[in-house]
Length: 163
Image 1 (cartoon, rainbow, N blue to C red):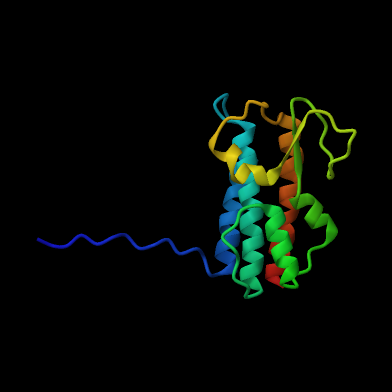
Image 2 (image 1 turned 120 degrees about the horizontal axis):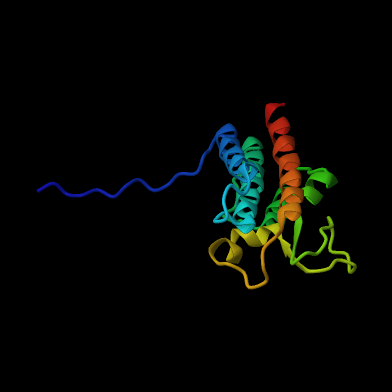
């Protein structure tokens, strides 16, 4: 009897363009929007988070820097800056999008004037990715605000890789 072999261990892309394709795939899912009542804005925000994470990892591959197996966007930004990858302030601000749920307002920074519960987009890589929050979910305007920021980040990374 033939011995069963295990499937190969997943190898993440080692090519910046391939990783960027994965980021753009996540962005495409996020852009598709809420097509039914079963689609949640939280799920679309998870795709937004993934698009930024994979874009930044593509940028690290492009710079021949191994990327960490981390998901939080703020950690990836700090890691890149420690490796001397310069990110413009507007890209960092866009990447660190804050989603306000329960009818609040969204700001690039956590102003004390904000209403509702503020959630970092990085949270969609963890707890919010696998559970439905008791705090509610972003509304359509919040989702569109985040999507716009994510598009800015992905487009900027693509321009850097094409240089």
